[in-house]
Length: 478
Image 1 (tube, rainbow, N blue to C red):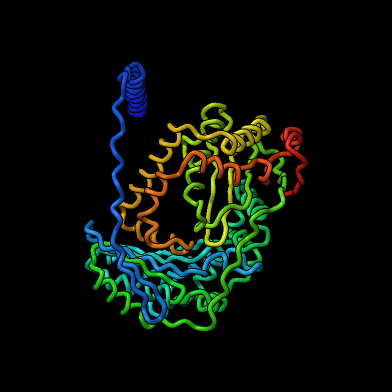
Image 2: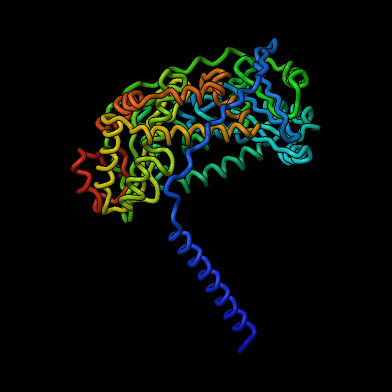
């Protein structure tokens, strides 16, 4: 016997031993009886609302500071309202994403490599991302380098150079990414559903097109940056091992001389509150599964019923224990995962849901969605289910606010969509007050299955007959 064969046999024996041990452990766990009466949950711990020092600089920049006695690190988030997808014109969808991605690709003083190396030397990093309502530029560093990071963040956000070579690279990568994404049924479904929910509104134009990417130029990006980035439309959040006075000093030094140019962009109009119901079948010949998506217009983030909608979404379709997922995944075995719920932005929102299912259960899956959507609006949620979901939401929220970077991003994100600073502390108490009647009302208002548009990506020959029971689907070829 060769050495290789011996090693192979020993490896098989080792694997067999491990599998046997796992099987034995699983069997013992399955046979172990739980106590007849489990102890009750402990009392929820209230969220310690941080003190937020707020100040507006002469140029209009708002600064919020949240000192924390945690690790020796300082987090910065600069949120610029009106710079996101909502500012993209119809012929440049997704421009905000490319603009955000190129902010750290070079400034008047530093190359992309130098920016990355400088941030790394501070024990931190910088980045940027776009949303419907703005662009957020983030940076973090060891507390001893807070001043250096403030200056670097200001340089990246205020003075990006958009070098031709970096723009060309970004365009090449974006085109390749679009080519790959366009072959995926989820991408096609999302794009079609956005159109059904938002129509021609800017919120429905978050996906780049080949023409928009090819039209991208460094000169155009510089013009867009000058138009979108303004101190009077921006908020700087500083959290971490730093006192308020020092943070304000850093903010003034790094951003105090920032001046706006030109007229401020117009406020984005709200999308339609209702849209005609559509049923779309996007052909995908030979597909072994169907991609199901459904949706309708939703609620703005500042809506008075926002927290009730969040709880309704959690009960119905957000998370593993939600009704939709338990039904389609755990009980029926139709899918690996199913979801439903609301997404809210500054002037509007969407109610969306969906799952990828086997061809033969396409119609049955739609039936279950219709059933669960109708039930949430016609039957009160039992007390135990209400309590479980409130605990889950409150617990997740409390855990997320333990991380100072998360606190900074959450405050900035709330501000972008029109929520005040004190929403951070008011969320959990307001959540606990939501009643079953309010959840049922949200179900009737936003999850009425008769008001949902449907988008299905799949093979018409394999699923077309099943779809006939749900109305006429307009067929689109790839």
